Length: 363
Image (cartoon, rainbow, N blue to C red; front, side, top):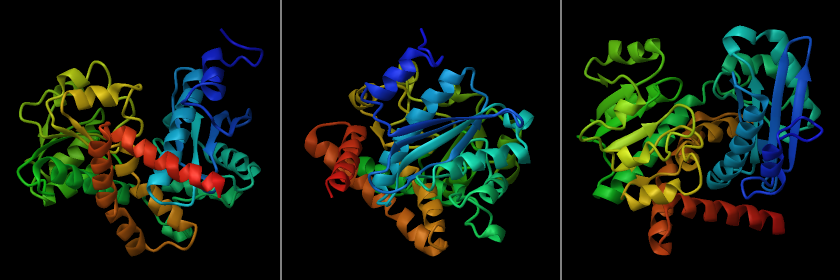
């Protein structure tokens, strides 16, 4: 079913009526000359201009792209609130295979749409977009972060994203095992691309035993050529069933925790970099019922957004790393709140983030 705009009714219902909606603005962007089709979703600007990356992905349908933009933008509101940033949540998706249609002209056209929002949305990198792309996008607007140092930016935000996830893992280990080290623990990383390969480095340096998988053979080889002691399994289905797995780190696309994967997880902790890991409401309770400690994704993967937000004020890596280090304390606070309130950690994180946004609106 669609309405007169051609947008499926379930997407419009999500936007205007569901608890997952409540977005302030959704912009559909098209530039026929370059083949650009994009969606920019602003969930909230209560804390400041919406900040979130641009995903470039070959969605099966436009409706799927819109739904992803809505979910990702909402997640950014919570992420930015929990990171203590003066930014609301937004996200953009460009529809198409970046290896096939990405061009300088398309990125410039996209940048003009970002500019049309007049600063309500600040963009950065995400899946399918890179620092070099942001350098191009920035040529047509003032609200682009994640640029190269040569162009006034901070460079690759994956470095601090991985560092923050590692801090979240340390907090989960402290909570479950009484010690914030991963030494001797078996950690499975699904997706060793932009963020995952940095996370593997942190884990190995801390003495963890690491198991990986990735759909890209070159990403796997980058790890194993340097660290032959790392174990490789065929796919995520195999990884989540690895015997003796202590921690599972989803670091690819969202929806990794669902009705099929949660019942067979062997890990005691889930802590990874992927956005929107919970496939639907209720999965957080399923994890808790199985005694699996879940570190909310938007809390532990906030290192990257801390970095790109800092870029707007003159980037200082040490300042950003100090802020990302606090993800350890924030994660501990969430686990403590969850235990005190008798709720899953994901619900505890939501309550804290929602309170900050509500206070900002009243202010």
